[in-house]
Length: 192
Image (cartoon, rainbow, N blue to C red):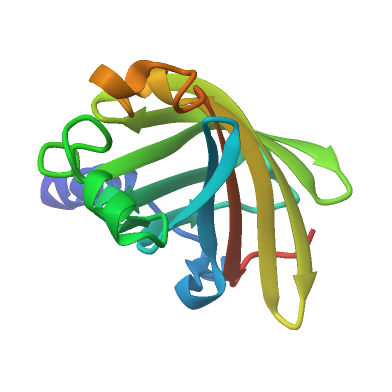
């Protein structure tokens, strides 16, 4: 009797320690070849567009119960490109992304709020070059043919993350504001 009580106690302790996932919860996965992360800055008043070629996402999110969800995005800063060899050679250097020391930018959600009609606000922490800023990301989701497309944009200040440091900190050369646009195609996301 005593042994069966101990076995039951051990089983309950293990069950409490293991994170359970509902068997009917679909696995949400990023479709990289149908997704993109772009950025637009201004150099001497002229818009300059770039993109990141490699990124990954971990999504645990039910659009009908967004407050219980989480989103994490990791961006390979070494995959940044402006499409111009001279500019692409500068981006990995310490004054810009310093990819040798900081190979990834990281966004981790802290809360998700539903606004209705497929619109959400994702609050979280963005870390670039070891510097973290709190921000709120507007997000819109559309669904068709078993896939969901999450889109949005936000403006960040590059100098808050020391991107374009040193001689490049002069905002008359390169503006402080950087527009970030994203489109993430996801499979397995539940219905809106």
